[in-house]
Length: 54
Image 1 (tube, rainbow, N blue to C red):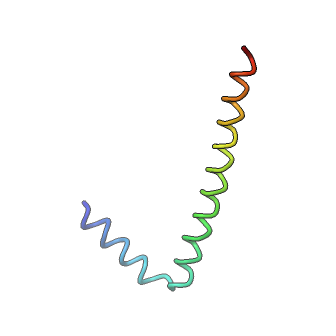
Image 2: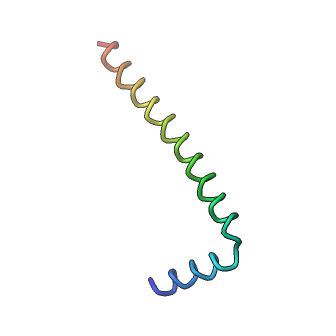
């Protein structure tokens, strides 16, 4: 199964141009980073609200 996934990944990477692959990785990374920052800020606000409620 791992060999099939690796083979599929290699075929996809060969089929796409390298610029498109790198661009997709950076776009996905930016979106994940933004979501992670929002989640961390929400957790911090939630924790602060727990302490202020007492």
